[in-house]
Amino acid sequence: MRLRLQVNGTEREAEAREHESLLTVLRERLGLWGSKNACEQGECGSCSVLMDGDLVCACLVLAGAAEGRDVRTVEDLAAGEHLHPVQRAFVDAGAVQCGFCTPGFIVATAALLRDNPEPSDAEIREALSGNICRCTGYGKILEAVHRSAAQGYTS
Amino acid sequence: MTLLAGGTDLMVDLNFGRKRPERVVAIDRVPELSHLEGNGHVRMGAGVTYTRMLAEDVGSAALREAARTVGSPQIRNAGTLGGNIATSSPAGDTLPVLAALDAVVVLRSKQGERRVPFAQFMTGPKKNVRRADELVVGAEWDDAGPAQTFMKVGTRNAMVIAIAGLALVVDRPRRRVGVGLGSCGPTILRAPQAEAFAAAIFEAHGWDRHLTPSDAELKEFGRLVATAARPIDDVRGTAAYRRHVLAVMGERALARVWSIT
Image (tube, rainbow over all chains, first blue to last red):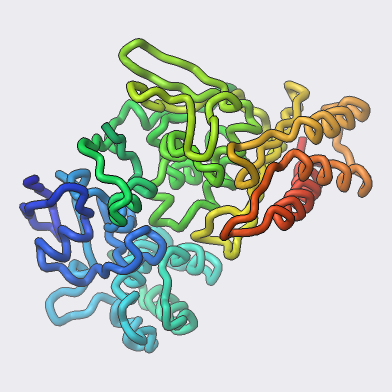
Protein backbone atom coordinates (compact mmCIF):
# COMPACT_ATOMS: atom_id res chain seq x y z
CA MET A 1 0.00 0.00 0.00
CA ARG A 2 1.04 3.56 -0.69
CA LEU A 3 1.74 5.52 2.45
CA ARG A 4 2.11 9.25 2.94
CA LEU A 5 3.50 10.75 6.09
CA GLN A 6 5.68 13.57 7.39
CA VAL A 7 9.14 12.35 8.31
CA ASN A 8 11.49 14.81 10.00
CA GLY A 9 9.51 17.71 8.62
CA THR A 10 9.35 16.48 5.03
CA GLU A 11 6.39 14.96 3.23
CA ARG A 12 7.40 11.41 2.26
CA GLU A 13 5.75 8.62 0.33
CA ALA A 14 6.62 4.99 0.71
CA GLU A 15 5.38 1.60 -0.31
CA ALA A 16 4.46 -0.46 2.77
CA ARG A 17 3.83 -4.17 2.63
CA GLU A 18 0.98 -5.79 4.49
CA HIS A 19 1.57 -6.09 8.25
CA GLU A 20 4.77 -4.09 8.03
CA SER A 21 5.74 -1.76 10.86
CA LEU A 22 6.61 1.92 10.69
CA LEU A 23 10.13 0.89 11.73
CA THR A 24 10.54 -1.28 8.63
CA VAL A 25 9.28 1.55 6.42
CA LEU A 26 11.69 4.03 8.02
CA ARG A 27 14.66 1.70 7.65
CA GLU A 28 14.01 -0.30 4.51
CA ARG A 29 12.00 2.12 2.37
CA LEU A 30 13.17 5.55 3.50
CA GLY A 31 16.79 4.73 4.30
CA LEU A 32 16.63 6.06 7.84
CA TRP A 33 18.73 3.49 9.67
CA GLY A 34 19.13 5.46 12.90
CA SER A 35 16.11 3.80 14.49
CA LYS A 36 17.32 0.30 15.32
CA ASN A 37 15.50 -2.97 14.91
CA ALA A 38 16.09 -5.29 17.84
CA CYS A 39 13.31 -6.90 19.86
CA GLU A 40 10.32 -6.12 17.60
CA GLN A 41 8.05 -6.27 20.64
CA GLY A 42 8.37 -2.88 22.29
CA GLU A 43 10.66 -4.18 25.04
CA CYS A 44 13.99 -2.55 24.17
CA GLY A 45 13.23 1.00 22.99
CA SER A 46 15.95 1.00 20.33
CA CYS A 47 13.39 2.04 17.67
CA SER A 48 12.03 4.98 19.71
CA VAL A 49 10.62 7.81 17.59
CA LEU A 50 8.24 10.70 18.15
CA MET A 51 4.87 10.32 16.45
CA ASP A 52 2.70 13.41 16.62
CA GLY A 53 4.99 14.41 19.49
CA ASP A 54 4.54 11.21 21.52
CA LEU A 55 7.45 8.90 22.23
CA VAL A 56 6.58 5.49 20.79
CA CYS A 57 8.26 2.33 19.58
CA ALA A 58 8.21 2.42 15.77
CA CYS A 59 8.12 -1.40 15.74
CA LEU A 60 4.67 -1.29 17.37
CA VAL A 61 3.18 1.14 14.86
CA LEU A 62 1.54 -0.51 11.86
CA ALA A 63 2.83 1.36 8.82
CA GLY A 64 -0.68 1.94 7.51
CA ALA A 65 -1.69 3.48 10.83
CA ALA A 66 1.09 6.07 10.41
CA GLU A 67 -0.65 7.56 7.35
CA GLY A 68 -0.70 11.33 7.69
CA ARG A 69 1.29 11.36 10.91
CA ASP A 70 4.22 13.53 11.89
CA VAL A 71 7.18 11.26 12.62
CA ARG A 72 10.50 12.47 14.04
CA THR A 73 13.44 10.09 14.15
CA VAL A 74 16.91 10.41 15.65
CA GLU A 75 18.10 11.76 12.28
CA ASP A 76 16.02 14.89 12.93
CA LEU A 77 18.10 15.95 15.92
CA ALA A 78 21.50 16.95 14.55
CA ALA A 79 21.72 20.06 12.36
CA GLY A 80 24.13 18.88 9.67
CA GLU A 81 27.49 18.31 11.34
CA HIS A 82 26.25 20.03 14.49
CA LEU A 83 25.26 17.51 17.12
CA HIS A 84 22.13 18.07 19.14
CA PRO A 85 22.90 18.94 22.79
CA VAL A 86 21.66 15.52 23.91
CA GLN A 87 23.94 13.80 21.39
CA ARG A 88 26.86 16.01 22.46
CA ALA A 89 26.21 15.12 26.10
CA PHE A 90 26.20 11.37 25.33
CA VAL A 91 29.56 11.74 23.55
CA ASP A 92 31.05 13.90 26.31
CA ALA A 93 29.89 11.56 29.07
CA GLY A 94 31.11 8.47 27.23
CA ALA A 95 27.58 7.10 27.38
CA VAL A 96 28.08 5.01 24.23
CA GLN A 97 29.50 1.50 24.30
CA CYS A 98 28.42 -0.68 21.38
CA GLY A 99 26.10 2.15 20.34
CA PHE A 100 23.16 0.05 19.26
CA CYS A 101 20.75 1.37 21.92
CA THR A 102 22.07 4.93 21.70
CA PRO A 103 19.65 6.40 19.11
CA GLY A 104 16.68 5.16 21.13
CA PHE A 105 18.11 6.56 24.35
CA ILE A 106 18.79 9.89 22.66
CA VAL A 107 15.26 10.23 21.29
CA ALA A 108 13.79 9.21 24.66
CA THR A 109 16.06 11.69 26.48
CA ALA A 110 15.10 14.51 24.10
CA ALA A 111 11.42 13.71 24.76
CA LEU A 112 12.01 13.69 28.51
CA LEU A 113 13.83 17.01 28.58
CA ARG A 114 11.23 18.64 26.35
CA ASP A 115 8.59 17.86 29.01
CA ASN A 116 10.76 18.06 32.11
CA PRO A 117 13.91 20.19 31.68
CA GLU A 118 15.33 19.37 35.13
CA PRO A 119 14.53 15.75 35.88
CA SER A 120 15.59 14.02 39.08
CA ASP A 121 17.45 10.69 39.03
CA ALA A 122 14.21 8.85 39.70
CA GLU A 123 12.41 10.71 36.91
CA ILE A 124 15.20 9.91 34.46
CA ARG A 125 15.11 6.24 35.40
CA GLU A 126 11.36 6.09 34.92
CA ALA A 127 11.46 8.03 31.64
CA LEU A 128 14.18 5.75 30.23
CA SER A 129 12.76 2.52 31.66
CA GLY A 130 11.67 1.39 28.20
CA ASN A 131 15.18 1.63 26.77
CA ILE A 132 17.56 -1.21 27.38
CA CYS A 133 21.37 -1.03 27.12
CA ARG A 134 22.68 -4.58 26.72
CA CYS A 135 26.19 -3.32 27.54
CA THR A 136 24.65 -2.15 30.85
CA GLY A 137 26.19 1.31 30.53
CA TYR A 138 23.46 2.97 32.54
CA GLY A 139 25.71 4.99 34.86
CA LYS A 140 27.15 7.01 32.01
CA ILE A 141 23.75 7.33 30.35
CA LEU A 142 22.33 8.87 33.53
CA GLU A 143 25.29 11.22 33.63
CA ALA A 144 24.68 12.17 29.99
CA VAL A 145 21.05 13.05 30.70
CA HIS A 146 22.09 15.23 33.64
CA ARG A 147 24.69 16.92 31.40
CA SER A 148 22.09 17.60 28.71
CA ALA A 149 19.74 19.06 31.31
CA ALA A 150 22.49 21.25 32.75
CA GLN A 151 23.30 22.56 29.29
CA GLY A 152 19.80 23.95 29.12
CA TYR A 153 18.54 21.74 26.34
CA THR A 154 15.80 23.33 24.31
CA SER A 155 13.76 21.69 21.61
CA MET B 1 -11.51 -8.11 10.61
CA THR B 2 -8.92 -7.28 13.23
CA LEU B 3 -9.00 -4.07 15.22
CA LEU B 4 -5.82 -2.17 15.98
CA ALA B 5 -5.71 0.29 18.87
CA GLY B 6 -2.31 1.05 20.46
CA GLY B 7 -0.66 -1.86 18.69
CA THR B 8 1.30 -3.02 21.72
CA ASP B 9 -0.17 -6.54 21.53
CA LEU B 10 -1.23 -6.96 17.89
CA MET B 11 2.00 -5.63 16.39
CA VAL B 12 4.05 -8.17 18.34
CA ASP B 13 1.97 -10.95 16.77
CA LEU B 14 2.37 -9.39 13.32
CA ASN B 15 6.12 -8.83 13.72
CA PHE B 16 6.64 -12.45 14.73
CA GLY B 17 4.35 -13.81 12.02
CA ARG B 18 1.96 -15.33 14.55
CA LYS B 19 -1.05 -13.57 13.00
CA ARG B 20 -1.73 -12.67 9.39
CA PRO B 21 -5.10 -10.91 9.48
CA GLU B 22 -6.65 -10.15 6.10
CA ARG B 23 -8.02 -6.81 7.21
CA VAL B 24 -6.75 -4.56 9.96
CA VAL B 25 -8.76 -1.51 10.95
CA ALA B 26 -6.85 1.07 13.00
CA ILE B 27 -9.16 2.74 15.51
CA ASP B 28 -6.50 4.75 17.33
CA ARG B 29 -7.63 8.07 15.85
CA VAL B 30 -11.38 7.69 16.40
CA PRO B 31 -12.22 10.73 18.54
CA GLU B 32 -15.49 9.18 19.80
CA LEU B 33 -13.42 6.59 21.69
CA SER B 34 -11.29 9.08 23.59
CA HIS B 35 -13.86 10.48 26.02
CA LEU B 36 -13.01 10.66 29.70
CA GLU B 37 -15.55 12.01 32.19
CA GLY B 38 -15.57 11.89 35.96
CA ASN B 39 -17.97 13.51 38.40
CA GLY B 40 -19.38 10.59 40.36
CA HIS B 41 -19.87 8.25 37.46
CA VAL B 42 -16.76 7.62 35.38
CA ARG B 43 -16.96 7.02 31.64
CA MET B 44 -13.63 6.14 30.07
CA GLY B 45 -13.35 5.65 26.32
CA ALA B 46 -11.59 2.62 24.90
CA GLY B 47 -9.04 4.87 23.21
CA VAL B 48 -7.78 6.47 26.42
CA THR B 49 -4.06 5.68 26.72
CA TYR B 50 -2.24 4.80 29.94
CA THR B 51 -0.44 8.15 29.65
CA ARG B 52 -3.79 9.95 29.70
CA MET B 53 -5.00 7.91 32.69
CA LEU B 54 -1.91 9.16 34.53
CA ALA B 55 -2.05 12.74 33.31
CA GLU B 56 -5.75 13.44 33.71
CA ASP B 57 -6.39 11.78 37.06
CA VAL B 58 -10.04 11.06 36.45
CA GLY B 59 -11.85 8.14 37.89
CA SER B 60 -9.77 5.85 40.02
CA ALA B 61 -6.59 6.13 42.06
CA ALA B 62 -6.00 2.38 41.68
CA LEU B 63 -6.34 2.65 37.91
CA ARG B 64 -3.68 5.36 37.86
CA GLU B 65 -1.37 3.21 39.96
CA ALA B 66 -1.97 0.31 37.58
CA ALA B 67 -1.37 2.50 34.52
CA ARG B 68 1.96 3.64 35.92
CA THR B 69 3.17 0.03 36.16
CA VAL B 70 2.38 -0.66 32.50
CA GLY B 71 5.45 -1.08 30.27
CA SER B 72 7.38 2.13 29.71
CA PRO B 73 6.59 5.66 28.50
CA GLN B 74 6.64 4.35 24.92
CA ILE B 75 4.10 1.64 25.75
CA ARG B 76 1.94 3.93 27.91
CA ASN B 77 1.76 6.48 25.06
CA ALA B 78 0.36 3.82 22.75
CA GLY B 79 -1.55 1.23 24.82
CA THR B 80 -5.20 1.85 25.64
CA LEU B 81 -7.89 0.86 28.09
CA GLY B 82 -9.90 -0.72 25.27
CA GLY B 83 -6.91 -2.74 24.12
CA ASN B 84 -6.36 -4.07 27.62
CA ILE B 85 -10.04 -5.01 27.91
CA ALA B 86 -10.39 -6.55 24.45
CA THR B 87 -7.12 -8.50 24.65
CA SER B 88 -8.27 -9.90 28.01
CA SER B 89 -4.92 -11.19 29.17
CA PRO B 90 -5.06 -12.46 32.77
CA ALA B 91 -2.02 -10.20 33.23
CA GLY B 92 -3.74 -7.06 31.88
CA ASP B 93 -2.89 -4.48 34.52
CA THR B 94 -6.07 -2.40 34.40
CA LEU B 95 -8.31 -5.46 34.62
CA PRO B 96 -8.05 -6.28 38.35
CA VAL B 97 -8.97 -2.63 38.95
CA LEU B 98 -12.04 -2.84 36.69
CA ALA B 99 -13.04 -6.03 38.53
CA ALA B 100 -12.61 -4.46 41.97
CA LEU B 101 -14.57 -1.36 40.86
CA ASP B 102 -17.49 -3.48 39.58
CA ALA B 103 -16.98 -1.74 36.24
CA VAL B 104 -19.18 -2.29 33.20
CA VAL B 105 -17.69 -2.93 29.76
CA VAL B 106 -19.56 -1.02 27.06
CA LEU B 107 -19.78 -2.73 23.67
CA ARG B 108 -21.29 -1.33 20.50
CA SER B 109 -22.44 -2.95 17.27
CA LYS B 110 -24.87 -2.12 14.51
CA GLN B 111 -27.52 -3.72 16.75
CA GLY B 112 -26.85 -1.14 19.43
CA GLU B 113 -25.12 -0.92 22.77
CA ARG B 114 -24.49 -3.82 25.13
CA ARG B 115 -23.30 -3.36 28.69
CA VAL B 116 -21.54 -6.29 30.34
CA PRO B 117 -20.39 -6.28 33.97
CA PHE B 118 -16.64 -6.91 33.95
CA ALA B 119 -17.13 -10.02 36.10
CA GLN B 120 -19.06 -11.59 33.20
CA PHE B 121 -16.92 -10.19 30.40
CA MET B 122 -13.78 -12.29 30.55
CA THR B 123 -14.25 -16.04 30.09
CA GLY B 124 -10.67 -17.33 29.86
CA PRO B 125 -7.11 -16.32 28.95
CA LYS B 126 -7.53 -13.85 26.05
CA LYS B 127 -11.18 -14.87 25.77
CA ASN B 128 -14.23 -12.74 26.38
CA VAL B 129 -17.87 -12.37 25.40
CA ARG B 130 -17.28 -9.68 22.76
CA ARG B 131 -18.89 -10.74 19.50
CA ALA B 132 -17.03 -10.32 16.22
CA ASP B 133 -19.40 -7.53 15.19
CA GLU B 134 -18.87 -5.61 18.42
CA LEU B 135 -16.40 -2.93 19.39
CA VAL B 136 -15.32 -2.22 22.96
CA VAL B 137 -16.14 1.48 23.24
CA GLY B 138 -15.19 1.97 26.86
CA ALA B 139 -15.81 1.16 30.50
CA GLU B 140 -17.91 2.81 33.18
CA TRP B 141 -17.97 2.68 36.94
CA ASP B 142 -19.17 4.65 39.93
CA ASP B 143 -16.44 6.75 41.51
CA ALA B 144 -15.56 4.69 44.59
CA GLY B 145 -13.64 7.39 46.46
CA PRO B 146 -9.97 7.56 47.38
CA ALA B 147 -9.57 4.35 49.43
CA GLN B 148 -8.18 2.12 46.69
CA THR B 149 -4.85 0.83 45.51
CA PHE B 150 -3.13 -1.44 42.99
CA MET B 151 -0.11 -3.65 43.55
CA LYS B 152 1.92 -5.80 41.21
CA VAL B 153 4.84 -8.14 41.57
CA GLY B 154 7.38 -8.56 38.78
CA THR B 155 11.10 -8.78 38.25
CA ARG B 156 11.51 -5.02 37.80
CA ASN B 157 9.39 -1.91 38.22
CA ALA B 158 9.08 -1.29 34.48
CA MET B 159 8.53 -3.36 31.36
CA VAL B 160 7.21 -6.28 33.29
CA ILE B 161 4.30 -8.64 32.85
CA ALA B 162 2.76 -9.15 36.27
CA ILE B 163 3.59 -12.37 38.14
CA ALA B 164 0.63 -11.39 40.29
CA GLY B 165 -1.45 -8.22 40.56
CA LEU B 166 -4.02 -7.04 43.05
CA ALA B 167 -6.51 -4.19 43.19
CA LEU B 168 -8.34 -3.26 46.37
CA VAL B 169 -11.24 -0.82 46.47
CA VAL B 170 -12.91 0.23 49.72
CA ASP B 171 -15.97 2.10 48.55
CA ARG B 172 -17.04 3.77 51.76
CA PRO B 173 -20.12 5.59 50.41
CA ARG B 174 -21.54 2.34 48.99
CA ARG B 175 -20.25 0.21 51.87
CA ARG B 176 -18.51 -2.23 49.60
CA VAL B 177 -15.07 -3.83 49.39
CA GLY B 178 -13.81 -5.06 46.02
CA VAL B 179 -10.72 -7.20 45.44
CA GLY B 180 -9.51 -8.02 41.91
CA LEU B 181 -6.66 -10.45 41.26
CA GLY B 182 -4.55 -10.65 38.10
CA SER B 183 -2.13 -13.24 36.73
CA CYS B 184 -3.31 -15.89 39.13
CA GLY B 185 -6.07 -17.68 37.25
CA PRO B 186 -7.53 -18.10 33.77
CA THR B 187 -9.52 -14.90 34.18
CA ILE B 188 -9.31 -11.93 36.51
CA LEU B 189 -10.62 -13.24 39.83
CA ARG B 190 -12.48 -11.64 42.68
CA ALA B 191 -11.82 -12.63 46.29
CA PRO B 192 -15.36 -12.76 47.76
CA GLN B 193 -14.38 -14.19 51.13
CA ALA B 194 -11.70 -11.54 51.64
CA GLU B 195 -14.16 -8.85 50.52
CA ALA B 196 -16.81 -10.06 53.01
CA PHE B 197 -14.24 -10.31 55.81
CA ALA B 198 -13.05 -6.73 55.32
CA ALA B 199 -16.58 -5.42 54.81
CA ALA B 200 -17.65 -6.98 58.12
CA ILE B 201 -14.85 -5.18 59.94
CA PHE B 202 -15.83 -1.85 58.39
CA GLU B 203 -19.47 -2.59 59.21
CA ALA B 204 -18.60 -3.23 62.87
CA HIS B 205 -16.34 -0.17 63.25
CA GLY B 206 -18.24 2.26 61.03
CA TRP B 207 -17.58 2.85 57.33
CA ASP B 208 -16.91 6.55 57.74
CA ARG B 209 -14.36 6.28 60.50
CA HIS B 210 -10.60 6.23 60.37
CA LEU B 211 -9.52 2.80 61.57
CA THR B 212 -6.37 1.00 62.56
CA PRO B 213 -6.54 -2.69 61.76
CA SER B 214 -4.99 -5.31 63.98
CA ASP B 215 -2.12 -7.37 62.60
CA ALA B 216 -4.27 -10.47 62.93
CA GLU B 217 -7.03 -8.89 60.82
CA LEU B 218 -4.57 -7.85 58.11
CA LYS B 219 -3.01 -11.32 58.06
CA GLU B 220 -6.38 -13.02 57.81
CA PHE B 221 -7.41 -10.71 54.95
CA GLY B 222 -4.19 -11.60 53.11
CA ARG B 223 -4.80 -15.30 53.68
CA LEU B 224 -8.34 -15.04 52.30
CA VAL B 225 -7.07 -13.13 49.25
CA ALA B 226 -4.58 -15.91 48.52
CA THR B 227 -7.22 -18.65 48.85
CA ALA B 228 -9.23 -17.03 46.04
CA ALA B 229 -6.38 -17.53 43.56
CA ARG B 230 -6.25 -20.38 41.06
CA PRO B 231 -2.65 -19.97 39.96
CA ILE B 232 -0.48 -22.17 37.76
CA ASP B 233 3.27 -22.68 37.44
CA ASP B 234 4.55 -20.85 34.37
CA VAL B 235 7.66 -19.10 33.04
CA ARG B 236 7.06 -16.06 35.22
CA GLY B 237 6.54 -17.78 38.54
CA THR B 238 5.21 -20.77 40.43
CA ALA B 239 1.70 -21.22 41.78
CA ALA B 240 3.10 -21.38 45.31
CA TYR B 241 4.96 -18.08 44.87
CA ARG B 242 1.85 -16.43 43.47
CA ARG B 243 -0.20 -17.50 46.48
CA HIS B 244 2.54 -16.23 48.78
CA VAL B 245 2.78 -12.78 47.16
CA LEU B 246 -0.99 -12.41 46.97
CA ALA B 247 -1.21 -12.86 50.75
CA VAL B 248 1.55 -10.29 51.24
CA MET B 249 0.00 -7.85 48.78
CA GLY B 250 -3.46 -8.28 50.29
CA GLU B 251 -2.16 -7.50 53.75
CA ARG B 252 -0.21 -4.47 52.56
CA ALA B 253 -3.03 -3.17 50.37
CA LEU B 254 -5.52 -3.19 53.23
CA ALA B 255 -2.98 -1.54 55.53
CA ARG B 256 -2.43 1.13 52.87
CA VAL B 257 -6.06 2.07 52.26
CA TRP B 258 -7.55 1.40 55.70
CA SER B 259 -6.97 4.93 56.96
CA ILE B 260 -7.95 6.75 53.75
CA THR B 261 -11.38 8.30 54.19
